[in-house]
View 1: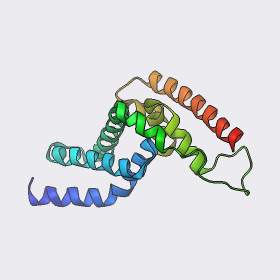
View 2: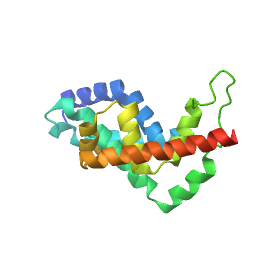
View 3: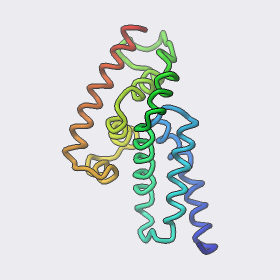
Length: 168
């Protein structure tokens, strides 16, 4: 890469680092893993930087790399064992919230219990604000698949949040 490409990449990285890290956290629920996932996405981007002609597609490339890395990592047997050990039952108590409203910590804990592909769809749709077509493009699947994964993910999340409420 030449000097100009390196400078452009450094500027992109500085501008998007925190956002990518937050998305990674939403996908995995652990800041250390989020850092690893974000690093994986940025390293992959750096390798392809010279070949990216449409810089407006850069966010989509990083997002796709991030989601795929998260899903791939979640498939590893040792990761599934460790993940269940570190999940808090109820991280935050709040007297000021209506009982039917999930706290942010409850929501994050609930997301960790949703299957990885459903979690990815929920994060991309509701936290990244992507439409169905953009999520389908990111995940490399049909729009119908995104819609069904969204419905299943929301149903699973509701069940998990109801369990948290019942035990809280």
